[in-house]
Every structure is written in structure tokens, then in C-alpha cells.
Image (cartoon, rainbow over all chains, first blue to last red; front, side):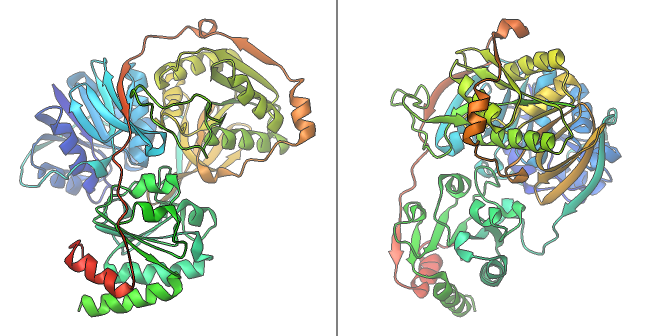
Length: 314
Length: 249
């Protein structure tokens, strides 16, 4: 049995989600190849070749693959599946977008966002916004699996796999790329950050969100997140949203400020190693999952925290 | 222009799902059921498109038990024109749902299929993409803005890191994300009017039948519970604990 991992990358660099997906793939089979489908991906392929346990790196390039268009990714991956028993990709917005198409065309049931590989046919995945875990056994000869990357450890680097080129497949006929608006930031990426500082509805405005959350995040070298309430209210952009319908994070330290802890938010961060909650409502549900809680107004606590951090991190 | 909107009856989004003690699934007995929130957003968007004069007819289709008529009725009260229920007590997998919807699409020939990006029960996030692939129609998932012309639809999509905008030739499949719109509450007169609209009750066999399941659910369990920790007195205590006890600073 061999597994194809479709890598997460932005054409310039390989994302850590790929290393984590390789770990999940190695639980299925020792024969794991990584596909880099994109445009101008030589450096990404070289990085993937270093992942320990990877047998071979495949590259496919076209304009549509460079934009990660679902139809183009599908056209690239389907012919390759003759040589694989499973295809895996991290459950990013790209993976979620094209992987079900692969399943439909192979006439198999996709298995979404697995958090555990039990055996080659059996997987655990969250359902009902993470309020239940489902163990499913697939009877399909070929498996199509997206992986919740935070549930797996990143594969180490130290390998030297060979790199070869494969066909890019036909371009999407009916889909035209118009534009990308990707937010540029010097902060770590939310999905893979070691520390995340998130703000909630209590911030009250976008200005307050910037004034309170961002300096604290920068002091900690953290990524910035937000609750759905804060995003819906326009205090933070949508790609900051942590939760079942946003990003799922599992950092070493998660600091929730002015977040009550709705089920849908908890589903996105409850696997963090250490959770800190700052909230003026002592009964807020966030305290039920927090390792450390501070009850009080963030307006006084956050400046005190900044001072205490300055003293401690000197 | 005709818009097809698939809608699903699911657990109400304000209800906390509880796992059955025999681990066979989530307990849905006596639990409030509603239209899946992402489906509601899709219906709302279709109605707004029609209100702008860009579409003539909205057809809501649901696959589920007889009670899913209520879900279709809600769509009709929001402004959809007619409904189709494919009645089954089986809980078909996304692949089977996509195949049934493909058959409906071929029978109804819509210009646009507008649907939720995922259902909040199975959380698969798969049917729209599978339907697009089976039909060979272009897809745009996770829509936060839709602009329609007679021959194309331009969709701003929520992707990791920001937005991507695509232009699709019609017919196409678009799936709705949270921020596409805020669904309306149906007014009483519209609820009354919806009672007179037709819902055709069909069976899976009318649309090619249901295939055998590919997945077997071995068990459904509760996620490991996190135990709440301690409430501290000051920011100084917190930094101290993070540094010495938790070791994360």
C-alpha cells in the first residue's frame, strides 16, 4: 500500500501542516510520496524531500495549480491515484476544497478531518462541532482523507528523497481566477503558532482589538486569533477566526481575552496545551476549560500582564 | 435563471449534542431540529438574488425523513418557490447525497446550485464539492460574496489567510460560508403563503436509488474532557505559573 500526501504550501515555502500529514500517512503505510502541485515550486519540493520517511517527491506545475484551483488539483491528482491506495491532505481551505472532488470521481466516501489513525481502514474524526468523536471504518479500496493537522506531530527533517516531475493535468475550463487578497503579517501563522492570543466580543471595536490584543501578541511572539463574535462584529478579519467553522489551533499556550467560550469557539482551541482565560464574568464557560483564569476587566489586567511579562522575559 | 438550493434538517445550532451511552451515535430524540445554518444562508442568498430580479425561480430540495418537509417549508417561507423532498429514513453518506442531487440537477436544469458549505452534524464539508465534480460544473466553496450575471457568477471565497475571488461559467455550484449574509426571519404572511406552495414528495429510487454505505460507524464517543484549572489573583501570578509550572514561556 502506498499513500500520496498533497502538500500545503504557498509556492514559496512548505507549510508545517505537510509534515504533520506525513506523520498521519506513515501510520497507514511506510510508502509515502508527497505531491507539490503549484507554480515555481522547486524550493518547496527541496524542502519536502528533507522530510524523514518520504519516499519520493512529485512536482506538478501550472498557472491554475499555482492558485490551488480545485478543478486543476483534481485533474492533477486523479491520474496519479492508479499508483496509490490512499491520498491525504491537511484540512486547510485548499484541502477541504479539492479532496471531496477526488473522492467523488473515484466513487469512494471521503473521510474528513481525521484526528487519529486506528488502522489502515479505521479513523477517528470529530462531528457535531467537536462534541462527539466518530470512529469510522472504510470499506473503500482507495481512501481519500483530510487530516486535522494539529492532532499529529510534525515529521522530522533529515531525509533526502528524490524529486520527479509529473503531468499537471488539464486546466479548469469554467473557472477563472480573478484575484487573491492575502493578508501579509510578520506574526506567526495562526494555524501553526506556538502561542496564540485571541480577543472576543468584549473588545467592543476594531480599534480596541488592535490596541489590546496585538501588542500582547507581539510581546509573546504570538499569532492573533479572534472569536466568531468578534469577527462577525467586524473587530477582526475573518481569517483570524478560531473555532469549528474557522481555524482549529492547538498551540502550547492559548490566551483568550474577553471570550465567553461558546461551544463553537472551544471546538477550535480546546486541544491547546495550556489555556489562559481573562474575562470579567467569573461564570463564563471559558473558565471550565482554562488551566489558569483571571477574573476581571481586561482593560486593567492586560496592561498588568504586559508589565509582568516585561519583568519576567528580561 | 433558476436556482436550486439543497437544504438539510439538522440539530439546532443552539443545542449541545450529547453522545448516547451505548456509543451508537448522538442522541437526537426530543432534540430541537432546524435548518442547518449554512443552508439557511444559501436560501437567503438565493432569495436576495431573486429579489434583485436576477432569478425567476428557487427550488429547495431536501433529502431526509418526512419531517424534513418542515425544513423545506421554512425555505418556502423565506422566499423559495417550490420544494422537493427525497424521503428516506436512512442517513445517506455525502457521496450518496451528491449522487441524488446530481440526478435532481439533471432533472431540474438549474443555472446555479447554491448550498451550505457543511452540515453541523456530520461536519464533512464535502457534498458541494462532490456534486460539482460529478456534474462537471465549476465550483466555488466558502463564499462570502456572490455577484451574478446572466452567464457567470463571481465569488469571493474565504480561504486561509484572506480571500480568493473566482469567476465561474454557469451552471455552477457555490457553497455558502458564514459571512455571506444574515438570514431573515420569515414574516407571518410569508409563512402563511408558504403553506400553499408545493412540495413534491419523492423517493431515492426516483433519482437513481441509494447505494450501499462505504463507511461503518464503529462507535461515537465523547471527546476527552478538559478539567478546569485555577483562578489566579493577579497578572504577576499568571506569568509566574506560565513560566515555572506550565513551562510555556
